[in-house]
Image (cartoon, rainbow, N blue to C red; front, side):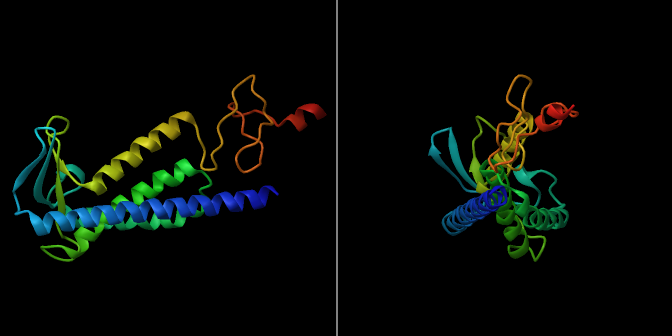
Length: 203
């Protein structure tokens, strides 16, 4: 039963990861196409007064125009990240972690597509950035960047809370050590040397 439950959770997590990644990728590419076809490069359009602007720029660097001139390096790194996520996805049993990797995959794919297929050439293409919020950030970014940063924030939250890839959390002192995890297995203890209840009964 536990194995079947883990398998179901794994399938659910994988579907969520793929769904989130495809959604982020689609929104990113459609929004970039809209900007390229409706705005002139360098043009700024006020959307919500001074709160939100569309400002079309081509970014040769990483997210938020960081490290301009190293496009090929980020192309290689992005390809490596995508390969890792595809390989690692089968380990995920948690909806929250599926969301983390789905956001990351969709964002990285979105910007990688620009680097591969946009000017000035394959692998060194410039990423389309257009979202400007001067009151919050002195940078111009895109939907893919938002997804990547959101995935990092969620990653830190899950890590700080100690939530595992299977959705389990450490059992604090005084809590039932036998409380089942989402996959049906006992939760791990917060202490590194904590023993299962059945071993304690034998001693």
